[in-house]
Length: 149
Image (cartoon, helix red, strand yellow):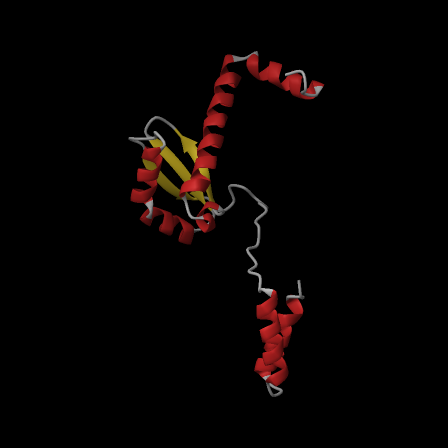
């Protein structure tokens, strides 16, 4: 505890000084641990647009950014329940809810696929062999966005 800056020490004392805040901190820690588990049991595309909302004795609420993700997660509830049971979480209902603005302006990583150097070389060869036209223009545009590595 001595490595914490003075502000962190004050915050720590503040939370530990009140039973309700200590209970809240425990609940937040449970949600954070479940969120880490969530990212391991759900496909990454769905994990990036969903998060653990509320947990209580009988329910786990999952908040999704859009309806398509919510629909897919609803289809996966049996496998999610099985995965949670393997980690000791049994007997809880999973409730999937759409909350589009629950976390405004949330940063999302863009999954931009890369093209290998050999693939880029082959595409460049193809581009030089093509006659002028829309396909050649589109391929040239693609190549301009993927510089050689």
